[in-house]
Each structure stands twice: as structure tokens, then as C-alpha cells.
Image (cartoon, rainbow, N blue to C red; front, side):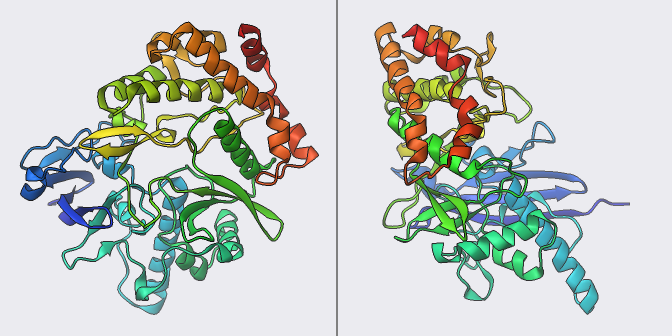
Length: 433
């Protein structure tokens, strides 16, 4: 039997101005999926051209992508960064299954059974898509657009509705209306936790992160606390605060890939910059090498990266994988570290980070080893000690910041999070100073 072959192509444009960049094609041959991308000739000749992805050279013709493993995306890295995260995929899959069931009951045309990676890529609302890459059909419609001209991104006033819909999905009790409301509003940043793109009170784009029904501590307050401590430690961070909806604390984190007038900034995750397979281990020194090769101000970003490394260890942020670090485009193919985001203290975990220190040392588990490696980040001994002192002072003030208005922790919350901030690594850091 001949295997079914199909192809689907979309136009790729850049930013609010919708500058044409190229075309992306999805290819399915039986169970095999792959993709190709080709730059437009006028983009290759443009004075503003740059490689939109580190695996897409500025050359003519189709550039083929086949994933190295089952866990890796079939799309080139920059497009993979815009795919929905675990939560977004969950909503898209549930919505598709319910649509199929509804069509069968009505005797209407039934959508095909399986979703392809292209379906998931196009399942993200255009307004929410991370970075500046946008996808369009032949008619010039950005993908995904909301049916019936409805609003794709809800305002802060609709938090209660959003929480209700996400809770229903978590409990496997969602209705068709819940899924229609959440459809396309997921994000590319942040794994399986319930969240949604949202407009803040001033009209700026943000991510609303909701407590999970499985939480045994206030995870949303913990993330906002970590971001405020990071800022106090001299780290560039995404703006955040806790907002309450019917006594439920929601973490509101501003999007850093947008500017005030609605402009979009190209974004790449550190995983994409490294061209990293999801099945491999990765190290902070590898990210440092990317900074040296691609960033407009390597000295500044190397110090910032080492500062984040120290901070992550001292607050027990053990979920510091390469998708939780990123870069924003400056100009002409030069980049800078994006503000820190998705930083979470884990009081129930040992202080061993997900990222390695380097290929020889393995996972980060010692502040002393981190200090000894400071030279790789172009820090002299005195500079490293200065940075370490600034981070230690910020982390030691965690209880006061936790009680502040933007975070709003209770005494019970303080008890729950204490092991994340007061542990052997923080003691060792103070001893080194």
C-alpha cells in the first residue's frame, strides 16, 4: 500500500511590519515528518538580513530539517521555539478530540484523527507567539487567527474565567466552551503548568501563571519572589507581580519580546542558540561560548550569565534547562541575553541544577566549583567575589521581599520555602566571602 504523502506551506514574516522572510513547508510521508525552509531572495539581499535561526544559513534554496531524535522538533530551532509548551499542547489535543467527537455526533465532516507537529505549531495565536517570527497563509492571514473575529488575548479582567477553564482541564472536566476559550492562548514558555497569555491593565502583553490543583505550596508566589530577588541581585528580569482573583494568587509576568508600541523582538532560546538536542546534557559554559560568538556585548552578558548561575544555585532553582534561558536580537545577527524568566525555588529538592557547569564537572552542585569556574566567564577574582557578594545579599533578604506587596507570602509560605534559600550552598557562599 502506498503511504499517504502530504505537504503544507506557510509564509514566514517578521515583526509588526510583516517583513517577508521566506517560506516554511511541512512534509508528511506516512509516519515520517520533516520540514524545509527557504529564504526569499529580497530578504537575502536586504541590508537588515540576519540568520533567523542558527541552523538556517543565509543561502538560497530549501534547507531541510529532520529531527535527530524522537524528542526533537521537526522544525528548525527558531520555529521550534514558537511551538506551544506542554500546557498549550494539552489544550490543543483536548480541543481537537472534542471537536472530532462533536462532528461524529452531528454527522458532520470529522477532522482527521492525529495531530501533526504543524497543527501544534499553527495552534498558537499570532498575538501570543514568542519572538518576532509570524506565520501567514496564502491569503495573508496570520496564523493562528481567532475564529469569527474574536479577541485572541483576554484582558486581566477575565482572570477568573481563565482560572475556571484551566482548572476544568486539569481535572479532566472541561467543556467545549472551556476549550474554545483557551484555544490558541497558550505560550511557548514554561512547560506543563497552567498558564495563558493575557493583556495587563496598561495593554501590555503578559503571561498569567495559575496555581495547579496539585500544588502543595504557593508556586506562583515563589516564582514572583525569585524574580524580585533576582532583580535585587543585579539580574535583568521580566517584570512580575502577584494579582489576586477570588483569593487565588496568579503570577503575572510581562513579556520581554514586545515593545510598548506593539513591536516584536526576535527571540531564540539558549537551546536553539546551542542547536541542542533535547536528549543531550548541556552546560553553562556552552551558553557562554554562544555569548562570545554571537552577542553584541560579550563581557556584560558573560557576567550576567555567571550571576544567574550563582543565583540559581543559591535559591535552589533546579529547573534551569536551556529552554529557560534566551536571547533577544539587537541588530545584524547580533544578540543579547534576554531577561531572566521562569525562575522557581524548589525547597523540596537538593541543590543540584539541571544544567551542567561544564562537560567535565557535570551538574552544578557546589558554589565553590562555580566560583572556581568564574574565569571561563571572563571574571577576575575580585569581580567574581563582588558578584557573589551582591547575589548573597539579595538572597539573604528573601523573607522581607517575600512579605512585600508584589509577592504577599504568608508565614506558612515562609516556612514552606525556607529550605530553598537557607541551605548548605548559601552557608558555603557566605564562607567564601
